Image (tube, rainbow, N blue to C red; front, top):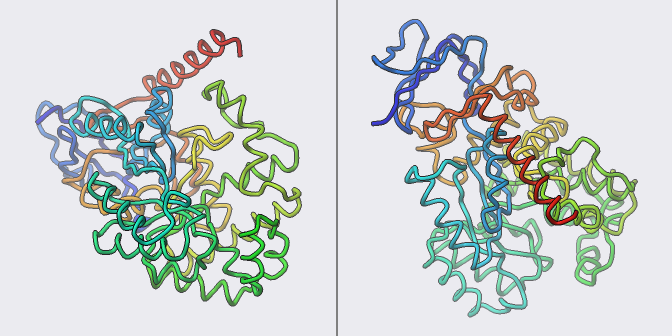
Length: 439
């Protein structure tokens, strides 16, 4: 059965409903939660390790729903865990890296390794590799045979290929996720059955009074941002949001990448980014990468206007029942693994989501979206023991998710000193590598 651990007299947070239950205890045996209830009456099994948690707040483990972990970078995974992240959704693995990611997840599930859960998919389906219906269906079949539960699509797909992928995914019960191809309107996505849109891709385009003209500009690599802002139609946006709600199209806004883009266009860099934990090769590339990001080619004022509209759209989506997922696109420039998720939660709150809604986007919502809510997403008996112990209430301010006292991953408790040691180890390692390479 494994060791039994009891956290006593803490406040348990249920992000699904935004409820805090004070003076509670939670019992973990092995890698599962086995009991929870009032501290005064919850039975603690004999021999259990008791962790007195008076004044602490316990949340489910956090998930980052848009990452690129590549070949399992060993210096990244301590950063995720030390920041309370117990789950990741990889959005584009190469064929070579896929085998390593599969092996990693097998080791995590079996208990041979401590690290975040990892859901993964292959690189996006896109032109020119996928041009027609035959190619699209064949590639979906190949990926389904690999055991993928979701398939990412990208900007360049033809209409023929996109709808063939959608049909094949529906037949095979595989989620279709990703961008909105240039030849598809975001208003068509819900009818096609796309499960999630990343980066609000195609959304502003579908809110334009001159959508067809703007689409032509995008397809011909012309800068359409100012036109999209000037022709934004709020009523059309409302209809689009309703189609997302009715069709169950989730959104992963990755607002942080747009915040970085504003700074880059303003010829500034984020001075508060925890770059002491970032690999030198990324640090060298990030200034140029930030300028070439999603708002490349526009001035800082236009970038700020786009970001304001995006914030408003996210707020309106959440208020009207569109489900939101917290994702960071790490290692996007200056989006340091682990830390970036807390920045994203702060941006969701800044956009107008309540602390509970922002927290839900990184806990319950990921579990429900991935169809794993029987095991993850909340603090209930029978579920995997992934949790984060905080010094302050995240339902008061979501920034309190950074005040981490301990992290439990599949029943393995990592307390404050060990978490600091993990961060120190990464900082030392990246500094050593920088010295060796002369960077």
